[in-house]
Image (cartoon, rainbow, N blue to C red; front, side, top):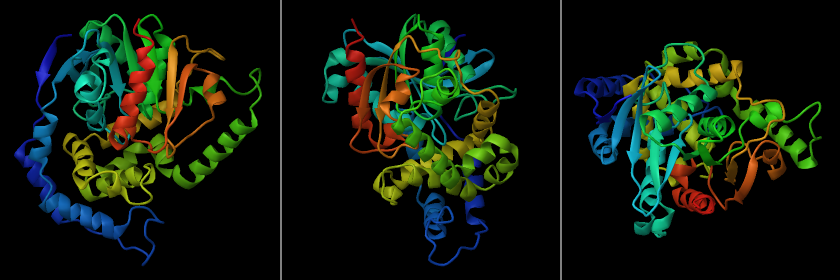
Length: 386
């Protein structure tokens, strides 16, 4: 359980191979004038790939990433990578933040400094946190998964051990979005004596699985509309989830072999799921998008990352029927999030103390609207510090 310092470094040979593959991309055809209607737009992906090949500087991004304190440690036989930054304040709260898909720990980096050192970022030193940002198993620089069953509940259990046994925190807070919200929910449900509170940007599927149907309170009109909206979204946008939840291995041969294909698969989600009005670069730079894609490429983790969908389908996150979380909870609702349930939906399962409807932003809140997210996290945990 020793914690070892870690430095991100990709061998030159891997980067050279990447550029060679980009130069040899075999491009598909496209219906003229179809834009993004059929998926990732050909002209944009060509532009992005050319930038990746000729102008993108991974070493510069690597240097920026390594300004943070990186570590690895063994948790149940898995080598887990994480960033750990100590708070600069009188009584920092330990806070573990979990990313989702197709994100990585890189998404979270923008919020670390204002959370650890609020006094230097427009806040009060008394709101500081010790921030831990792990890469989920099978993501980024953590171990690839080699056994069945690595679902969000299992990741939550690993995080509890990481915080308690490896880092020595007897009590801590948790935050997350996307799969990270499910992992965070697991921590809230399963570890009420250790978790002081959770903050998420979506109410996880635990609500639908355990708090609706026979014996539960009937759905309100707004909840019924939410269910209909969710089904419509699945029909229009959920193809990625279905293939990743049923045949991720088949998908992986193309995405793990073609960097252009990997970029098209990931960047389309950043465009669709963000509050960008169709212009993905109004929210993220090419360098930010390609740093995310490059992390997947150089670590060879697109297959292991998508397996989380397969495992979750077979073992969905679910507490006992009708069981309600015992730890205080906060949900920040960004208007362009994939799923935006009404408050009463979340109240079925969460001990909801704070519900914030944000003025802008989407799925990748920590990268897209870090200021809004940071302020909401600070405000919620402020009342739990005593």
